[in-house]
Length: 185
Length: 284
Image (cartoon, rainbow over all chains, first blue to last red; front, side, top):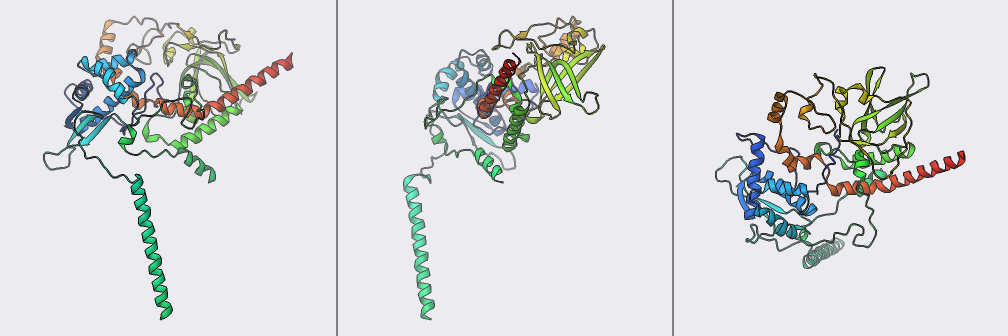
């Protein structure tokens, strides 16, 4: 049983965080893992939508969300946040983009800041295929069609109730006719 | 059964709908919610004063209902006995009920070298040197055998864990068993003792040169130790954001937990102060 580390205050992430990190093995070992993820996070902040393999995308999503949530919580004058932004973003103009563009965009969000969509698998088999990792609110057209029919919209609620009423009225009518049939016989 | 149902209803989270709904702006008032009721928010220092109220971050063992029940039990215990605020480096005296001792009580004075655990299993280790023999005792804070916990000197040190006192000169771990409680001049700030402890010559129990300790004097080791420490070090862990996230409880959850226990802890504190003042007046 361990006590929670109190040295840093972190915002809750609105993505599913797996209990154990992936190793992402490479010749440089654990140091190389963070180097790879740094390249991914930098590309995500630069291009706002990237296509890559699913395991790396899933790991990078966590780090991108953490970076943005720290930037929103602590803003740009916080030493620790600046150090993290400096480490994770290889191009320094992206640090400016993080604090001047992404923080105002995601300030009032109640949901996650990134979206991970499964992409095509180029050959058959049981393996994790590609994935598309994107920042929400990006200028590109949407990847998935918007669902324009939610059950909680008013006309849908009224239609559901009308359907229920119709069905119960029909059952009553049927019950009425069967009773009259039985009484006749 | 009714109690369990009530607790389960308290833990039911509000239903979140689509992403679209999530992106709408939300007012970020902390002291008032939408209906205008005041929301209790505990002061931010609570996480340092009562770290055992926060659960173990490992998701395999998280159970919201069990944590809530544990917090209720912890508050119940705290209403019976005073568990004061203390930190690693504070000198404390603990009185435990002991069937085998002549007085039926056993009292031990020592410096808190480490604290850990969460919930009802929170513990701390006190160290002292008695008759030239180093003694360490691990006490579970919420154990019903504990009769009294006194903080004789409330202070912090430069490190969160003082395990290096085991390899330090004995004078740094020796405290008189009849030590009296020291009065604090300034009640609002807990002083940090900047003492740098001198270690005995090697061999040591741990490789202290690899641990970035602030509270020890210069170790004066041959250069090969520091070279090996650099080779073995993991400097990238400082930047591993997800590692930090998995090791801690998010701020929103911390606020929720402490808002729950804050009012009860405050009430207990007030009652104790009144009792102390009444006792003082009666004496006079």
